[in-house]
Image (cartoon, rainbow, N blue to C red; front, side):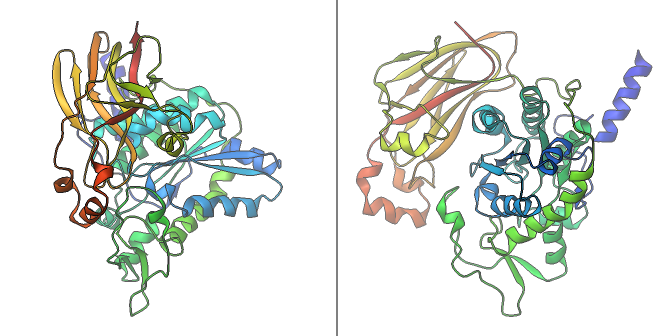
Length: 441
């Protein structure tokens, strides 16, 4: 038995997966790795059949950049196949939310290919969390759609470019690469050429004083005239993160174009078999529960927003149901599992929630320095819990006032002074409870 364990440990170590929770083996930075390719996706394209591509990631994918350009490229290659892209990206979010919203935002479209882009937004996350979330995403796709192909893509920022230039993937991408190796699907390092050009002095990561003030939204797509340096260097972006559509995103798309032929020729079509999990407790068994699910008790000043409500309309694509909580409103439930969160909104009229888990209480403020507008958020309640135990949760809207102007970025305080009324309420909006586990009635 010990000999067999030693062999298994050696194999996992070679993949960079047999390590302490916070240890990461930095993987080599190469332009792309084909592995098993995209055989099912390729077979449909070659047969002229319709295909659906889900682009699943953060704000870099949400921009009208490599996502739009790569779909157009595939349409040119396969004009007889109807190619339907799905924008399943949400700015400012990582794989932790991704593992819980995957079923609603991606799998409902029954995609033939899912591009997954979370390397940048997972950059500050703990390795153990990335492993659980990213493997959970892969296993959910494989379980629900055994013939769906998967491809991880790695994007870059001014903060992590040195890792790429040293020939290594950043920690988050290295973890993802290990998962892709185990499940034998391709990865494309669309950052490779960006890092190379910057090192050669041919590209600057940021050359604009226009900061991106929104985590997501139209401002990320504001192009105007893309700036260039006086000596003609390519300007990747305005903020060192979000590429300009006709510079940084073109480099990203070209990297995908270079990898695509090899990925479309590799492998044999057919259903994928699901091996044993790499990481115990990965987030493959998630539940996303609206607040009207039996077993969730609502009390006090809490109302379901009607479909024609402005807030409900704005977020209907991601949150089909949203409840507004006034002061003292509460949500109570019990569950058996290892993790619990909620899917809510942050915004100018939002206040503080009091969260109690198994008798321990803390406060979560749903307002931050960006809150001149509303955006989606996730509130963490508990993680790494005893999966065999029954846990009790209560969420209460406190209605307590606080100084919102002082919390806003200085550049955003003019908005507060201009329209103080929109910041006056202290309410909350919650749509869904997320569990790794199951609700207990």
